[in-house]
Image (cartoon, rainbow, N blue to C red; front, side):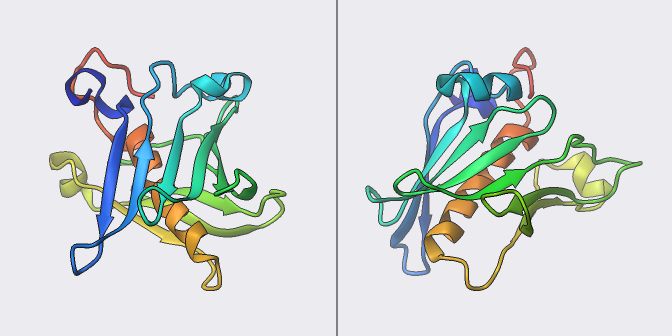
Length: 176
């Protein structure tokens, strides 16, 4: 999948602590028609999803892409698929010589009434951005946020990275 599908591939990411014990698993299934904002709302099979487990095998949360005409939208769900937070992305993902700011995805309350944090791809400087594939991300959220939601937001960060900031290995694979 890595060779043929590039950033659209499915994956399982194992997060370990300092004692090399797995504390979190992030699982993204492969879906061949996923990634288009406008299809994600009408067809559940065309929306990117991601499951977060802690310990591995026990779901603590899910991330689901939502339909949108213009900007990326995601729902953060608990283990029982109940909405906990929403993520609203920007309409432009430009970073370069003229656009040197961070790219921010707002963390919103479930009713979309208040921003409570953000996930951001941070500007690393012109040299690093042009000549390396390394990216820096950050997450801000309330201190008292449930630990399972915090783990699910970490999974959402990886989904956002893969969807919008990974370069395809195959030049014929379109980036969305």
